[in-house]
Image (cartoon, rainbow, N blue to C red; front, side, top):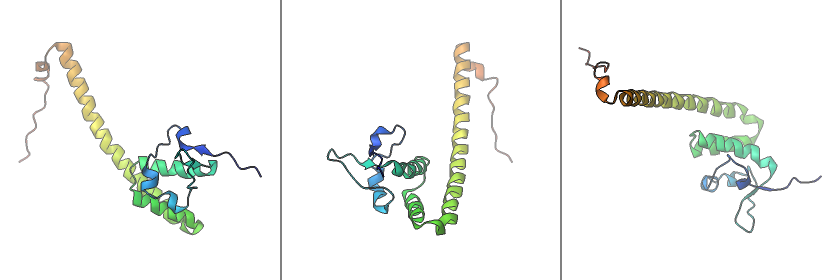
Length: 140
């Protein structure tokens, strides 16, 4: 059987792990081959890319390294850990949804300020907002 060619991770746009891969000791978990070519580039086989894609997704969406390593360990253990791995993704999904909601709140504030400044620029002054500004008072 012919072995697929090795590919440098640098050849894959969007899969940016930088030094994370080594710092997190992902290679030591046995998920992917630890081969490094003479130029110092880590080589991966096509079979490694599913793992790398999942690892990059978890990392880039804010999962702590410790949890990523736990997920990898469970993955290497096989089908006995299917429920644990599902739990990892369900828990992380909830965390990502919370972060999205937080970011949406920030985006709303940014959009408000964009409207504020566009209106002020259109009228040549921020005084245009004096009539419409809300004044907040503390409840008794």
